[in-house]
Amino acid sequence: MLGWIDTIVQGVLLGGLYALYATGLSVIFGIMRLVNLAHGDLIVLGAFLILVLSTNGINIVLAAAIVAPIMFALGYALQSLVLNRTLGRDVLPPLLITFGLSIILQNALLELFSADSRRLHVGALDAASLALGGGIAIGIMPLLCFLTAIAVIVALNLLFFHTALGRAFRATSDDAETAQLMGIDNRAIYAIAMGIAFFVCALAGVFLGARANFDPSIGPARLIYAFEAVIIGGLGSLWGTLAGGIVVGLAQTIGAQINPEWQILAGHVAFLGVLVVRPRGLFPRAAD
Amino acid sequence: MPLLETHDLTAFYGDFQALYGISLTLQAGETVAIIGANGAGKTTFLKTVAGLIKAQPSAVRFAGNDVGSRPAAEIVRRGIALVPEGRRLFPSLSVEENLLVGGYSSRYSGYWGLKSVYQLFPALAERRDAPATALSGGQQQMVAIGRGLMSNPKLLLCDEISLGLAPIVIRDIYAVLPDVKAQGTSLLIVEQDIMRALSVADRVYCFQEGRVTLSGRPQDLTKDAIHAAYFGL
Image 1 (tube, rainbow over the protein chains, first blue to last red):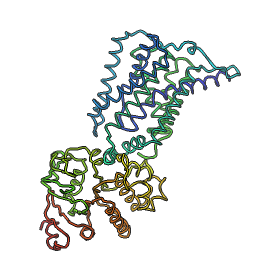
Image 2: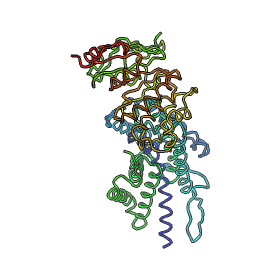
Image 3: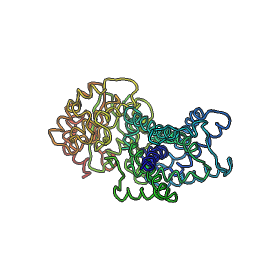
Image 4: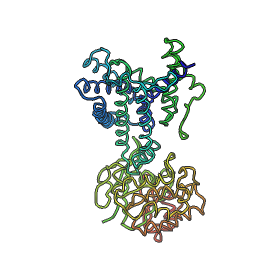
């Protein structure tokens, strides 16, 4: 019994990591209906950038604080210089571009860092845990990851629902042409949205690298987990994305508890199961 | 110097030409109405002036500047707001948020703000937190006009603001236009209802198949002339 409670707690915390993977994907899909196939590789890129700084003696928190704004700038530039040129009714060009970007990133990282497995070390926090009593303990890093996911979602919801920029985001998402009539430059809005997605990728990179080994090839699998979290949660809702992440995380840990071979499979099965019961996800947005 | 002047304005949707050389002027303080049958190019003309459709830079002059090729977001900041056909409210925003988005570009203050728009349309103040699309058609049109005013425009373009509304509601909506003009905003109105257009406008232009077929002051235009210009008979 105790083992199961422990499994569930670990699964929920793992869900926080998947929510962090998925938040950026959810934001850009919600605002510009664009699926970024390089999203997983961008998380890996964030992890490598932080690795470079931390191997040069920079504290990992400081490294993340440096890398996150850099990632924001890269996202802003990608959207305004490349992806904004593909805006239009056709969904294929942006898909092809981000698919190409995914391949470029993987190969560039392979060239620069080799295929060796890497790890971000966070000192004493690596193995620190918090005893909850009754024989259950939770790792400090997974807990921090979960809290970071919640903090990111709270911050983004404050931005979207309580600021002029947030109103501009939602107006552009509703009707980009009419938003322009309000003086909103939709291309700038898209660029900021992509910047935010990249920023969150950097944060996700910290926990990707601190939780387990990473190498240049693991991006696409993170993309799939993120994608599943977004779809399970329902498009357009960030809290739904967190719930979706938790569903995938729980399914994976429960699957692994039954049989370690089932971990990855159980996550995908849970995804398909939710789609069968709730085709629009758990918390679909009322409109569209 | 006219506030708005278009000179031989042409506009295209892809290969399809919608406007064939429209020349129109509007003086500051004037109300100008555009009438014409469906497909005459009235909406296209307003969209081109508002910057949603690109034109030759010098084909549209506003307050002395060539603005024909400027993007819509810049045109609003220069002082032209469009109340689009079909209202086009933002469905995921509340009434008040729709109004606030209308003021997104006006960093400087003017007469129009939440308070003055609610004074103009008291019905909206009670529904300020409702989703904009939950309102009646007439109230939605009020939101659309209020949203346009929030940028404190020098020129307000109104595209078919009476469309689909009951006559009594149309009367209420037209009743606020004098208040709008009193704050120094000029009006360019597209209207299906010819009698309505003739009664509010200082001057009228009649479009037909992308060309101006008649223009003048309402009292100088005969019914037969308007009939001929409208239908091209």
